[in-house]
Image (tube, rainbow, N blue to C red; front, top):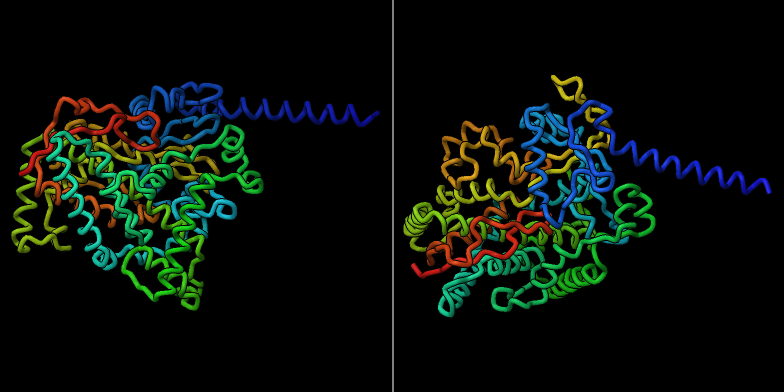
Length: 504
């Protein structure tokens, strides 16, 4: 009989501890005297997310409200306390100077049950460092030059599809077409398959690619375990990726490997380079570590290449055309540069053309500034970190750090008239005097975007092909001002981007 009172006491004690912890979690910053917005008990400072506010809206609101109050302010993502960076100086410390204290992103992954989550972007610690060193050589300038003709070929197909659509109706929803373009590029380079998404809008690879971005959803219990007790979530087999998506991409990878190895096929694409890593089991790095990868690791890296390259590049291309359609003088200047460079190369879009299209690159950078696709960078503090010069501000171990990149890119102290599209913000003479930390579209430091070169190349080719052949104008369906999709983690148009397209 004595057991029952003991069990009751234990249960009451656990309930009391949970209630105390929940209350403590949403008073963390207030008790430390760090400025923060009063949190909702359940949603913290993310009230309205996915319904009335986008992530970008939340970051911008917090940045504007607390900028100038200190190096960071407090922020609650649900009940979890985060440090919200407010100055470029602290961003530089986190991303570069004191990187070793903030090397992890702190995201959940479970490669054992969900092999596609074992991707570079989600990895931390030694696993991240090891994988980064293994695949970094596949993104060198030399490797980009090898893959360049593949992207140009898809760019030419993009031009053909635009021409056909323009003949049928000059008003085109460009966001969808450009997503098909990047799907074909990524499908070819990352998975080694001909997707034909440009010709077939209902291709299986395109449909599954879209789902890879939208179907990463968890029920409340799984979400709670994943964020609060990740080790228990891994033990229970909680997955980020739906089973049918895992099966689809693993099947594609295995079939591709089997076909190439059986027929002794060597392709100069990203998949081929990953396949070399898988097969070089005796190859060692300078520190003596085996640099081969498993089939599951190969699939995960190809998958993250798809997720990162598909959305970011197509969105950047879409917003670039959106702004060029509203600024005909800028569009004409960019077009003339493209035509002049092509003339110097006998009409051929060579790899060397990319570096010569200086103004086109400025257009792309300005687009990324105004429409930063991933508007926040995440890091995890690995040890207690007193902010230099601000003894009151201490980021404790395991606290997550948020760097609101999109909001910083719209800061008038960094970019005059930040809501006006002005490619001259990235003129060579201005870039020479600007601290690199003030433009973080690809991150910065050792954990910057590993696919930056490829992403830029893909966007340059797509934009050059289109400007050479077409002129873009706004129409009655063009969303002005832009209305953003509140359901998306990234910056995205809610209703697509309709433009009038005419042949040059």
